[in-house]
Each structure stands twice: as C-alpha cells, then as structure tokens.
Amino acid sequence: MYDAVVIGGRCAGAAVGTHLARQGRRVLVVDRSRFPSDVLSTHFIWPHGASHLNRLGVLDQVRAVTPAHTEVTIVNDGIALRGSVPEELLRNQFRLLHGDDHGITTEYFSVRRHVLDKILIDNAVEAGVEFREGYTVKELLRDDDGTVVGIEGRDGTVEHARVVVGADGRNSFVARALGIGKSDERPRCTFAYWSYFSGIPDAPAQIHRRGRLGMAMASTNHGRTMVLAWGPSEWAAGFRADVEGNFHRALGLISEEAAGTVAAATREERFYGTLDQAAYLRQLHGPGWVLVGDAESFKDQCTALGITHALRDAELAAAAIGRWLGGESDRDTAMAGYAAKRRSQTAAAYYDYVCTLAEMKPLRHDELQLFSTLRGNQAETDRFIATHVDVAPVSEFFDPSNVFLLNDTARESSRDHGVFADFEATYRDHHRNPFQRAEAEGTR
Ligand SMILES: Cc1cc2nc3c(=O)[nH]c(=O)nc-3n(C[C@H](O)[C@H](O)[C@H](O)COP(=O)(O)OP(=O)(O)OC[C@H]3O[C@@H](n4cnc5c(N)ncnc54)[C@H](O)[C@@H]3O)c2cc1C
Image (cartoon, rainbow, N blue to C red; front, side):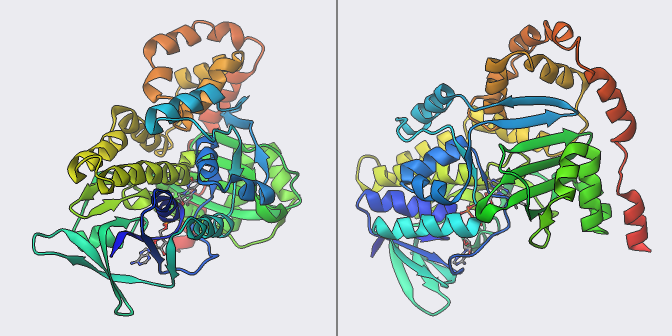
C-alpha cells in the first residue's frame, strides 16, 4: 500500500512525488515514457518556475547546463519594453500561496524537456520516490462507493494507494477513466511553430507581437536558440501549407532585425508545431484522486506558463495531500484548500487574460498608448512584466485608476518616438492574413 501513486512523471508528477516523499510518504510515480525524452513544449520557465526548481533542489543542475537571464524584452507593435520580474513581487506571491518565500530567484531559463524532466525525476528518486518508466496505467481501481484506491498497469500489476494523483497531461487518462469533463473551454487559441538554431549569440529572451503575429527567441541547451512564431488559429491552415517559408515570412513581418538574425543562423533541427492549444479547466479532486498540471487545466502558451504553473500546483497539491494524510485535516477540507487557491479570483482573471491574448486580436490604440507610457517608467514596466507572467494580479495593474494614471503621461512620453506612425503601418499591413495565398495554393 502506497500513500500516493502518481501517474505521469514530468513537471507535475515528478514535483508532486518529490514533495510527498520529502514529507515521509511512500510514493510510486509511473510514466509510460522512458526518460530522458521530449514532449511538445517551448520550455520557457519564468522566475517563479525557476524558484520552484530551486525549492525542489534542482536549480543548480539546470543552471549548470542552461543559460540564465533576468531581463526580458517584450516588443508590442514596435514598442520595446525591457525589464525583470521584481523580487519583492515574487516574494509576496510565494508567501501568499505557499506560506514562505524560500528559494526565490529572479532568473529565468529555457530548458529543453529532455534535460529538465530527467533532472526532475532523478531528483524525485533521490528524495525516496519509487519510479517505474515505460509503465502504462490501463485501469483505476475503485472500491464499492467509487473511491479510487489504486491502479492497474498494462503489464497486469496492481498497486494500491490512499490517493492517486493524475499528473498525466492534457489527454489525461485519469480524467477519461473517471468521466471528468472539461469546463470553461476556450477554443480560440494560437498555432505555434518553432525550431532550434546555432549561431545566435546568447542574449536575454525577446518576445514580439506585431499585428496578429508573435515571435520569441530564447537561448537554450547545447548552444542552441529556440525561435518560435505564432498566430491566430484561423490563420493556421495557410501557415501550415509552407511551414519553413511562412516561418521566415512571419519573422520578417514581425521584426526585420530578428528575422535577419535567424536568417544568418543555422537551423539544427526540424520544425515542431501545434495547432491545438485550446484552454480548459477540469475538476481538481474527488474521492481518492487529485489532478495536477495539464491534467487539471491548460491554457494557450502565448505567455509560456504551463511548466511554471505545473510546478506551483504540484507544491500546492502535495501540501494539501500531506495535511490530509498526516491527519491535520480531513480529506475534503484539505483538498478544498487546494481548490480554493487554484480557483481564486486572481487565478480566474489570469486565465481570462491569457485566453483573450490567445485570440491574437490586434492591439488597441489605448493598449499601445499604455506600452508607450511604460517606456519611461521602469518600476511600472517591471510590474507589467510581472503581471503578464502571473506574478502580480491582473486586476491590480489593469485597474482603471492605475491605467488612467499611467496614460496621463502617455502623450508626453511618446513625443519623441514614432509609435503612432508605426501603429498606423501595422494596422495597414499586418492585420490581413499574410498566409492566405499559401493556404489557397495548399488546397489546390
Ligand atoms: C506548443 C506548446 C508550447 C509550450 N511552451 C511552454 C513554455 O514555453 N513554457 C511553459 O511553462 N510551458 C509550455 N507549455 C506547456 C507545458 O509543456 C505543459 O504545461 C507541461 O508539460 C505540463 O506538465 P505535466 O507534467 O502536467 O504534463 P506532461 O508534461 O504532458 O506529462 C504527462 C506525462 O504523463 C504520462 N502519462 C500519460 N498517460 C499515462 C498513462 N496512462 N500511464 C502512464 N503514464 C502516462 C505521459 O507519458 C507524460 O510523460 C507548452 C505546451 C505546448 C503544447
């Protein structure tokens, strides 16, 4: 009898297993994959994600093989903002969510999943987790009243546990087996294509939006740089008709400078891509089971937060399970605490923020005016970056009183910048589907 069986051994599963093992629980983690291996992800980890890696004790290992930065550049329709996530906001968030702020770092990383997931699962084993890879769960065991009490593997082995944690990703087997549907689904999302290039100097990450397109560049492992392009799902078919051509075409439309850098570099791998990033939520827990990571919720990766949130939720879920298994509170009360943090107004507002961004609507004049204003104000730029990546509440930064206050100075701060001329050009040239011709050719 295990205290917990965790299905899925990547960011969510390895992390929840490590936290539970450190509480002294007997934990089995199983995964049908073998490690090291990749999953579809652009693997950017913001400072709160890196702080979770530090709390798990693996940050030094990640840092040893992955470039680290603290500054990031975000360019919206030509308006460049450069800044960092403030340490104080990180500390506030950790104290609020987890009760302490140990292990905080303002660094971020873009770490390949075959690197990260192997480090995480080895760390879990070191913490005392029993790990079985290449192990597919085919059934959940349930008692007479429906409580989940264990798993059955495809190899016929049966394992019993006080709780089964579904950390088994978007297409969660646990959710399917229990008939847990999706809620608050948001079908409008982005398509995304990326690859890895050598010959681009290591530099802080850059993220660009122009019109309805986006691109990002971040240095990652093995001396390579990940370059990503994305756009609204309704333009996906046209893009897909000629991925390589449209990838470079998109970069050219978004930033001539970035496109030039990538054109001069060498592509070292094939293109990876996805057309499906539709967001959803699922029920978080029930009798004998808990969902964590993508199994519990997913949202478009235009703000690159799936890993960071999986690590956060692993810690929250493990703390709640620990309170229940340790007898501090009954199961329902403990798990309600996990649910309350995951379904708070702040979390709902951020979910909405990402889902709205994922529609890739052209930025409005007032939004650009706000970005223009921020250029002269480093503290508010940093607060915007923290808000954009879910370290500070969306409701506070975008509170009308704050926005009005910032916009009061907009005209003054934008006087010497060609922002509004640039904005007109963007509206004229960049809001029509640039991949339509390719789409028509692809269907002929
Ligand atoms: C295109 C794209 C880009 C992304 N970019 C970023 C980014 O830049 N930054 C970021 O933070 N996040 C990003 N994400 C999201 C991130 O990849 C996920 O949020 C993260 O992988 C979730 O981790 P997880 O542990 O919940 O699930 P997963 O990583 O999906 O792991 C689930 C594991 O469960 C195992 N499993 C499933 N079923 C079974 C079974 N029946 N038996 C045994 N094992 C099973 C699988 O083998 C798998 O290893 C991106 C996602 C996509 C699609």
